Image (tube, rainbow, N blue to C red; front, side, top):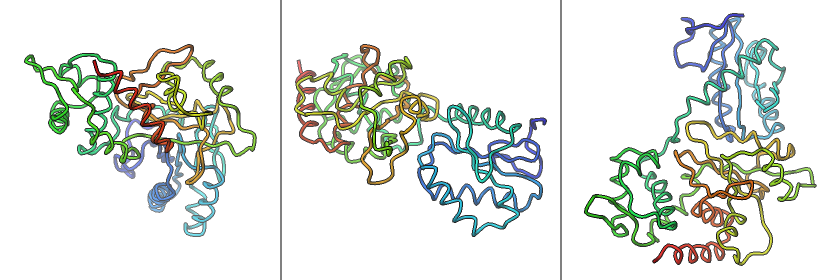
Length: 350
């Protein structure tokens, strides 16, 4: 079976992610919405309708839907699509150890090509997720606060641009908005002089749009203890995964007023790649994407910026102070969040 170096005339450029002979492959990362799933399947169905003999493969990587829900949606769509189209459609769910396909698994000869296509498409993901310019200030604010808390000193615009991944015009617009809280030096360096409370609480209110969040639950009835998950994570020796949330906040403030650990918060540093959480299968195969309203046992936040600002730890790095604070707000632990914020402000002030 020979891979086509160019898409055939019957398939216009950019219509699908890859073509191999009579197979059309479309890859989607992190699908959490049935609307996205339906729209992509409809797109493939329309392409197949005008191309007899072609087969369409929808490949889902880092999926945010459960397999039962996926199968249920497939059964619903089966009543809508023509039978000859359904026979030429396959959904593939990509795991670390292989591919699950339905209604039928993909042919063996297709599996390797599908995996190669996913790896290639993951590499095409931009280092900064699409973000509206009006929201760029919040990513910039997070990095400014890290420097302020750690008392890093004045920053140069060029260096700060490389750290955040934003262009100079975007940085300049954000800094102008934060001007009342900035200290500018004669050599054009800058730093925060005070905590920008209004901007911070706007960030907290928009956290769902600004942060990439994936939540997971264990429905087996016997979830693994957090310490067991941490032990398995240490064994992976991943420097791109840090511990945040309550555990991270306790690292920076051991006396944090909270009994127990509600969940495990992890931060994945993934510049230039997709937000892959396949590593969770090695921590606990029972962890599945949480449905709306479910209380998660594990939450993964992904950082796409060039630098992680992780703090080295004993076998596992710690997420930066700002990520840990945002995690406390995410858990609605407002009293603890304010306590932690007071601690960080006192640490930052000379």
